[in-house]
Image (cartoon, rainbow, N blue to C red; front, side, top):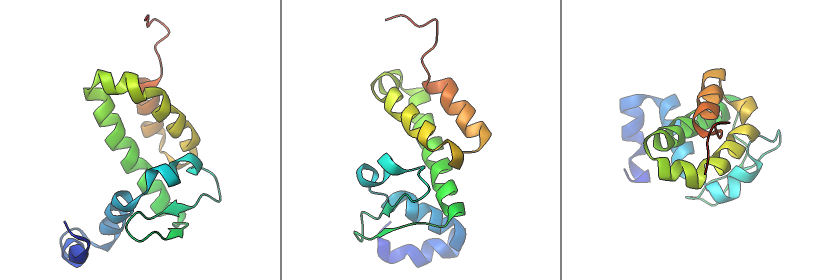
Length: 119
């Protein structure tokens, strides 16, 4: 959906949900994720180039949505899990204060190497 139609999305899902969707879609992950979880982390908007610090609740919602999406992909794709698992686990570990307990536990269960795993 083009950015110019954000108002239409607000009308369908509400302003709060649309703000979460926008934050998720606008995230410049290469610039944002290395510091995500730090108290003074800066969020980089890939659409506007603007850097800002979202309010804590919105940042937690962003972390939850990001975790849900990445874990869904990792759960379904063993190759992705092998390739990106350590990177994602490191990200979730940095973001642990932003994640709910169920999201953290699910992430750890899916991404942490099993002690019984062998190469």
